[in-house]
Amino acid sequence: MASYLQPTPHPSARILAGVRSLPPPPTAPLLPTRNAFAGRKAAAFRPARRFVLGLGASFWAQSMATSGAFGGKSFLASARPSSNVEQVLKNVEWPEQFPFKEEDFQRFDESSDSQFYEAPRFVTHIDDPAIAALTKFYSKVLPPSNSPGVSILDMCSSWISHYPAGYKQERIVGMGMNEEELKRNLVLTEYIIQDLNVNPKLPFEDNSFDVITNVVSVDYLSKPLDVFKEMSRILKPGGQAIMSFSNRCFWTKAISIWTSTGDTDHVLIVGSYFHYAGGFEPPQAVDISPNPGRSDPMYVVYSRKALTA
Ligand SMILES: C[S@@+](CC[C@H](N)C(=O)[O-])C[C@H]1O[C@@H](n2cnc3c(N)ncnc32)[C@H](O)[C@@H]1O
Image (cartoon, rainbow, N blue to C red; front, side, top):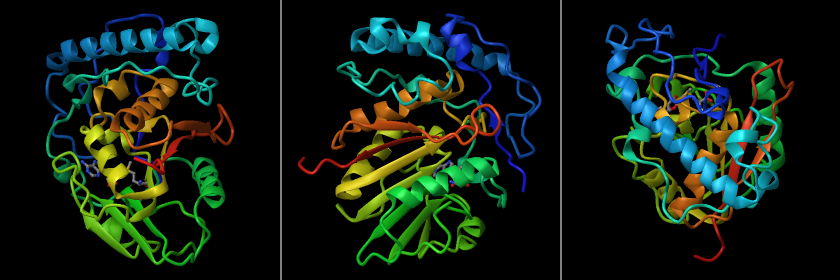
C-alpha cells in the first residue's frame, strides 16, 4: 500500500539560514488526491507564508537563546533535522504567551476538510519500518492489552491505529473524518466522525480516557490549543497523550507553521501545544526513527495529564 503523504516541502535548512522568502508552491497538485486549490494561483498565499516564517524564526531564536539549551546558542543557528529532537524540549523556557498567530494555522487549502477526506484512503501514510517502530513504542507504553477499565482515544484515526497485534481494551474510540476507514479499523470498539477544525470540543466526559494517541495528523489541527485543552479535560489524571509524526504530510492541508519548518521545529511546536494548553506535565520527545536516513523518520512528543490541576 502506497503512502499519499509527501515529505514536508520546506526543510529546516531554509529557516536556519534565515531565508525569509520561500520558493513558490507548485501550481499542480503534488498529491494524487482531490485538491480544490489545484488550479489556483499560489502567489496569493506567499505574503502570509513569509510572515509566518519570520514569526516562527524570531520565537524560536528567543526561546532557545534564553533556554540555555545548546550552550546558550540560538536554536536556529544550531539545529539539525533530527539529531536535536530528543534534546529540544529539555529545559525550554517558554515565552509567557502562546507565540503563534492566527496566520500560522492557515492552510494552503482552506476548503472543507470533510470534502478532502470524503473518499476513503486504505493506504499507509508512513513506510513499514516507521510503522513497526511506532508499534514497538506503543507496546512499551500502552497499558497491557485487556486491562480492566482502560479507555483509549485514537484521535485523527483511520482504518489503522498501529497498536500491537491483537491489542484490545474495553473501550477504544476512533475519531476521524472518514466513516468507511473507521469502520474497517478492527481495534476500535466505537468511532465518531468529527471535523476538529470546525468543532474542537471532544464529545466525552471529563477524566474518562487513560491514553490519547494521534498518528501523523497533529499538523492538520488548525485550532490545536482548543483541542489540547480538551485532551487535558478528558484524560484521567496521569493519563497520557502520545503525538507521533514523521516528515510527511498532505502539505496543502497542514498548517503554515508546520510546512515552513523542519522536524526539530515540529517537536517544539507540538511541545508548545502541551505547554500552553495547560494541565499537562512538561512534554518530552523521543526519536524512534528506525533507520535514520534510510526510512521515514518517526518522532513522538508525549505528556501526561498532571495529577493535580
Ligand atoms: C494522514 S491521515 C492519518 C490517519 C491515521 N492516523 C494513520 O496513521 O494512518 C490524517 C488523518 O487526520 C484526520 N484529520 C484530518 N483533518 C481533520 C480534521 N479537520 N478533523 C478531524 N480529523 C482530521 C483524518 O482522520 C485523517 O485520516
